[in-house]
Image (cartoon, rainbow, N blue to C red):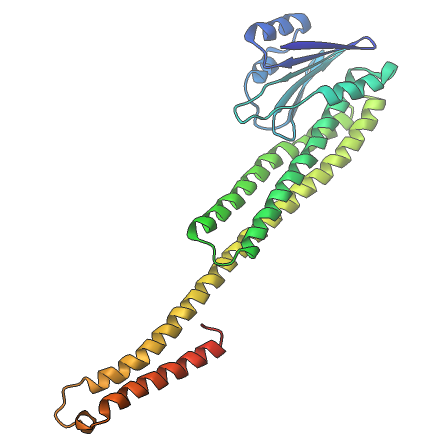
Length: 299
């Protein structure tokens, strides 16, 4: 689908899930580079920018990690985006509304700057979502003692899921710094004046987004360590209980073992009170050990 927007003599062509015929029509109309146009047909690995003779090609990602391929030239601007299998997408309506408010000041550089700022703003929504998810996982780590093995495995899986999403987000955020730096150095002819002001603000936002992603990665690492520590403490508590009960049973077993030896001369064997006396010693020893372990919070 192709949607055209006209702003003060500048044409913004927004292409969503394009067919090969639509892409070829754009190629014929604007004379796009074959190399960059081929790259727009497949998913890029990271944000990048290429400067060509009569236009520039920029790749960036939204907060949901939807790829946005952008072409900027004299009097025109093109965005190519697809809805991938994971549901990642980007809504251009907010950027269109912002561009409309600029009125006569609109040019290809301003549209590019506004689109980039909207993409960077989306990173904060993603970090907020991941931070909320991480806090929910931390509540499960510290708020639900004695979880089942399945619950423990789910916590571990969720932590590594957050870490994986942060790595994907970081691959989209960090390389964009170099793209914005190139634009601020005026390496693209159509980016000047008001566009530079917007990109400078966007660059500051991007630096904050990078810091947030790095902080969240550190928090995830701390959460993983904390989860392992909690699991270790729970295991130690179980081992304490097993040791305590084993010691209690061992005391009674020791007495029974002594009087179970088949020696001929054992005075207590022929004693009338020998049997209840043995049971009494077992009970006293077991109760004493139980009280000792209970006082030490092992039981």
